[in-house]
Image 1: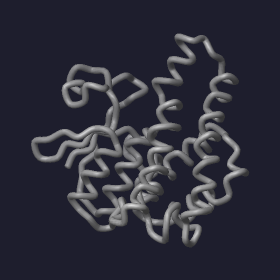
Image 2 (image 1 turned 60 degrees about the vertical axis):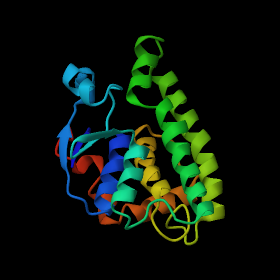
Image 3 (image 1 turned 135 degrees about the vertical axis):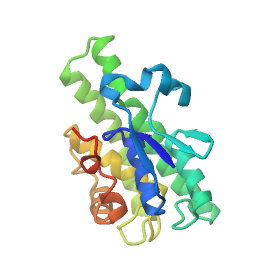
Length: 212
């Protein structure tokens, strides 16, 4: 497997966690987003969206982090990241999508660049934008964690799931942009536990060879 990645991409971070959890061997190919390598013709042939991650497996290229992780969950079922129980699966998917489809897309690099360059927003406005969407998503996740977490160590039940795989990179981003996490003690507790697990720790941005 070959993972096209960038050290600080939270979507690539999710896939690294999943690959590590499933103990799948993979090679990373680094795409320097800050330098625009994702928009070069060679990469666009792999992923016409010009985004990371992309996962090349045999003769196939897969894109979009949640789709890639679902593929990995079918390919290597243990540990299962999407529960077999339909209700638990729906809850996990809802929490994962809250991060990956509601929070992260509004706060990723291309949106921040557009706000600054095309919309003429300054640092304070961009910070306020970022914090607003983090708070919108984390408020819901905090309530759901109170309902669905068994031990407080995971967002749903008592084992790692796709929801946790999405949470940790978004917590990293929130801290990076100095968003207060005081209102989300359950998320902070789950994140603290998850970061003690080797699969999560080894996927951290600063542990990647292309980290700046």
